[in-house]
Length: 305
Ligand SMILES: Cc1ncc(COP(=O)(O)O)c(C=O)c1O
Image (cartoon, rainbow, N blue to C red; front, side, top):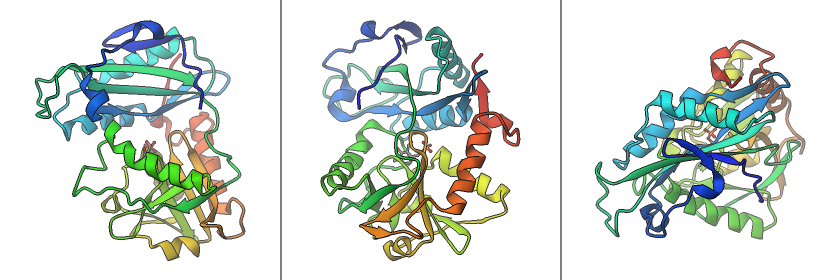
C-alpha cells in the first residue's frame, strides 16, 4: 500500500517536513520493536474535519507504554493539540488517518528498558478512504495463534506485537483470503490481525472478551454502545470456530477498517453471503456519528477547525 503522507509531520514537539524527521540506525525500536502507536481517523463532512474518539485514543496511547515503562513525555492535551495542529498545518480537508507513535531511541543493545531510556514521539498523517471492500470480504482462520497475556500483553499497542499479525496476514493472502481471523491459545476466536470481531446470531451480538487476547478496540467499544442504543443485546463471550461458521452475520471493527462485513470464512458462506441487516444498521449509525449528523455521542468527535 503506497501512502501519500502529508508534507508536515510532528517530531519531538515540532512541526517539520517529512524529509527532516529522521532517526539513527542505532534506534532501539528498530532492533527490538520498542515502539507504541495509535491509528486515528479524521472524517471530513464538507464543513469540518472531525477526529473520532481522540481522547480515548490518547489514553490508550499512554497506557500501552506503561506496560513496558516507556513514558510518553507529553501531556494528553499536548498530544491532542499536536494532532489538531498537524491537521491544520497540512490544511487537511478530506478524511484522513493519523498515526502517532513513540519509541525508544538510542539505548545501545540494552534490554533493560527503564524510565531512563530516551523516548521520542512523532506523528504523521495521510488522506485515507476505505481499507477493505465495504460490501464484504472473505476471511480464513489462521494457523498462527494470537499471542496471549502469558507472553506479551495484547492490550499494549506495541510495534513488536504486530509480527504475529504479519504472519497471519501473509498466510491468509497466500490462501487467497482478504483477511485473517486468529484463534487464541485455547482455540477460541480472538480477533483479526488489526481488527476486532463480532458475530450476530438470532439478533444477539457477541464479541470475544479481552481474555481471548483481543485488543480493547475503540471501534469495538463504539459498536457495543451503538448496538445497545439500537436495543440489541450485546455479549462479551468466548466464541468457538464452529459458532463463527454458523453465525447469521460476522463483521470486523477497527479504526482503519471501520465496520466490515465478513461474508465468507474458510470458503463457507456466512448467513446470506451478503452484508447482514444488523451490520448495515450499525454501520449507518456509526457514519451518522462520525459525519456529525447524529449528536447522540457528540463527545466522540473533536472538530479540528
Ligand atoms: C490487533 C488489533 N485489534 C483490534 C484493533 C481495532 O482497534 P481500534 O478500533 O481501536 O482501532 C486494532 C487497531 O487498532 C488492532 O491493531
